[in-house]
Length: 233
Image (tube, rainbow, N blue to C red; front, side, top):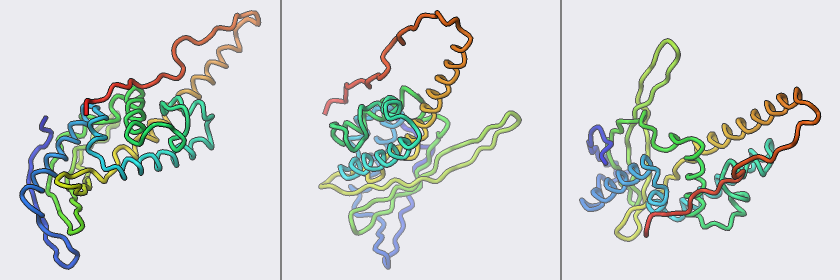
């Protein structure tokens, strides 16, 4: 699915710092295709496909970064609440899941909490401005995307620049940029705040109930597990 407003390749050559316009026409085409496929996977919330486009070291970085965010939130929230929000039964570091499956599981859980956290249509159109290749098998995709801020009285629209890095692996190119590292902690924080507010309101409401009010077990799965179905490899 095309989500580019335009596709204008502006390839920069600065020999002094080892940047070249293009390694080959094939590399140019592959990186452009991988970027578009990763973008489609993000908007379609196909996190298994998105994980396939990410370099193994990037998936490992995702685990390490999410673990630091987990530890920070654990300073203020109960770990059981935190694990429920994230969708795993331990810290990211201690999880038995592989790096790839951890990424998929955390993202699927986040999508149930905030369906627009990945691929919000408000960020369209996305304009690809160019791909810059370096001598160390790195490619930098330069683009911008639409954004806006609303108040009750007005709306301001603007463009936000973006950069995604790819690295060459054999004849293919894989993402070195980790997806969602900035947005996921915000999704968790909102859910934890919602849980805490709900408990506070429940305790306040309960104060007005008769002392003989029967206790009731909460219904539903308190620790919903994300669906495990993944894209066929």
